Amino acid sequence: MHIFISKARFGAISALATFAFLGPHGAVLAQTSSVVDAKAEPKIAIVLNSGEATVSLIDMPTRKVIKTVPVGKEPHHLMMTPDQKTLLVANAAGDNVTLMNPVSGELTGRISDIIDPYHIGYSPNYKWFVANGNRLDRVDVYHAQGADLKLAKSIKLGKTPSHVAFTADSKIAFITLQDSNELAAIDLDTQTVIWKMTTGKVPAGIWMTPGDQYLLVGITGEDNVQVIDWKNRKEVKRIFTGKGAHNFRPQGDKKHVFVSNRIASTISLINMQTLEKVGDITGLPAGPDDMEITPDGKTLWVTLRFSKKVGVIDIPSMKLVSVIPVGKSPHGVFFTPRAGWE
Image 1 (cartoon, rainbow, N blue to C red):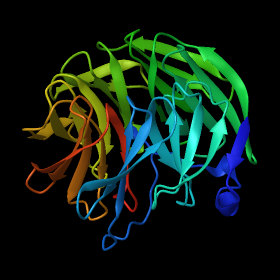
Image 2 (cartoon, helix red, strand yellow):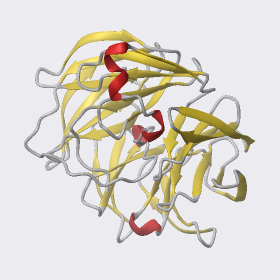
Image 3 (cartoon, rainbow, N blue to C red):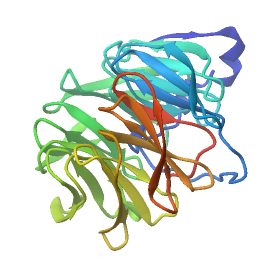
């Protein structure tokens, strides 16, 4: 594992093993609880242009792109360190992770030799780091100790590993396999596959409901979210949301979660307690994908993968209020502070 870090930022990120996880930006990688200052306002939105190997920096008050920054090939997903001082940008085709100041967008370093990091995540106890190799059909599990990541095992799992979620006790990682139409469970302590089960067509985003009760899987090849009782390896139901159900972003109230429907160009809101859809956001440009919510819980930002745009949505009215042109195939989106991930 080769790490380059600028001298100015070394003190803030010297303990790489404590890196936290974000998700869905992409997807949810694991669940955390944090206190958010609802009065604080984020200034810069960071958007990953996966088709251009760049990041767009958006001034949020004016909703205009102020800078485009080269990073690495195919940046898809991103996450924050636990000290909230460094953003990790995973460059899948570049086989590395770029380090960035989450407030200014300044590049501060790079972690090399993370092979094919399409979707990445630390287990809740920070002991394990998981990198899904989307193009290489493998999942790499790393020991996270000190300032080093040591590969524990590379697991050939199935076709096109996509998103990852964890149990709260950090015992199990769940991986969606897009082109095998499967969900796999990996025992992190032994790095062995516990089981696989069949899902709907092209499973992608994955989210664990509160209390580790159910897994929600976005079935991108169909028009629904599959609810899975993972302890008994069986489907509970399908929640019909829209064609291309893809990724998740919890609203932050421990009750509701948004799901983007890529092909239908809508976003649905699901009640995680009743397992029912309670509303839709319509009238969006093509390809809604990853989402982020402002700390006051009133505004949802979403990348529009097929439109080279980012949408800004007023949550109370469930209406699109602004569209911002960015680069090709925008995927992950991030800003800080932001609403909680419960």
